[in-house]
Length: 257
View 1 (cartoon, rainbow, N blue to C red):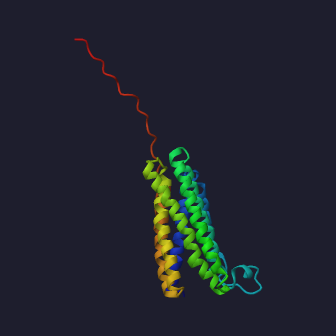
View 2: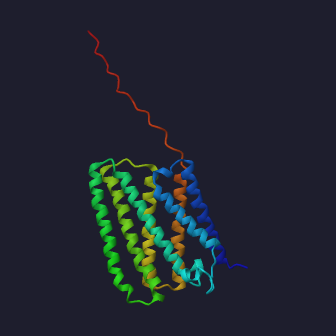
């Protein structure tokens, strides 16, 4: 019989799967998938990663072909988690890049500012990764995954958060018209990624002890469920009615006295 904690984890994982599928179906049913193609790719990557956790082996033997890649933990190993999160982080950055392009492409002033913002974001990520790389040679293989998850991930995420925050600032500063779902992606991603970055920094500071890691994971999972629910609501929202262009106001003729 499954423990109570295991039942809760399975229920939450099923909820995440259902919400992810709900968002994807809503995007295609409402024809919003064209609003941001990289966002659809991100959701598909999330869905594939979660499905592998459901159907993939939780333990591997020395003779299994995935043993050399995932280790004995299978799809429940930290190695798989790290690879999955790195792919998702790249997809998040791709979403930020596409949002920046689609938001400012028709506005020269905002486009010039966006180029500077992209340069700063890329430079910050490259400097952070370059500062992290010398530390890799100083750790053994057992601690490498923990070090990469605890220090490399927040640095990449910070660049994505800064880029998304910069896009939101450009929208407010230049009063740019944005698609409703673009706004939903921005207002959903920024606070969630901040929570995720804080969670990774907390784990890196306090260690990967099981009780603390579980507590942080619960907070992160709750935030992600709320994020998916918000996106599902926006994905299925009915399209706004087309605006009717009003003609010029009638000119009142002066009557002769």
